[in-house]
Amino acid sequence: MDFLSNYSAQILGITRIMSGLLFLEHGTTKHLNFPPGTMHPPIASLSGAAGVIEIVAGTLIVLGFFSRGAAFIASGTMAFAYFLAHAPQNFFPVANRGDAAILFCFIFLYLAAAGPGAFALNKK
Image (cartoon, rainbow, N blue to C red; front, side, top):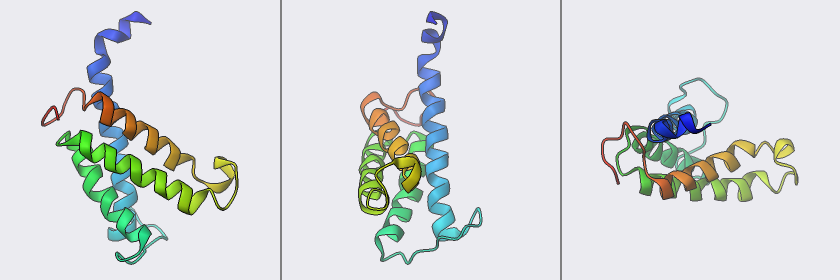
């Protein structure tokens, strides 16, 4: 599919924006109850701190503003989330509900390495 290679920067940018929006949604659910959810941890807890990171890093990733650093921090946060919260429940990611954390971890690690792509406020 060589025809898609002409659009790789745009596809990378769209992937960054959509991943950032989904990540941001996890944080806003935790701390702003939007969209309404059941998980509302105290900010001083590990899950609460992760929610703050999800809001801040998610916003920076969506905007493409210092997105490499934000994506690197988000990737590490999701690695911690998987190994601290999901992996102890069950070996299989689909059974421990950690598949989203794994995907976020590796998508953000890729974004940290590849950069923001198109539609970014800056190229850092």
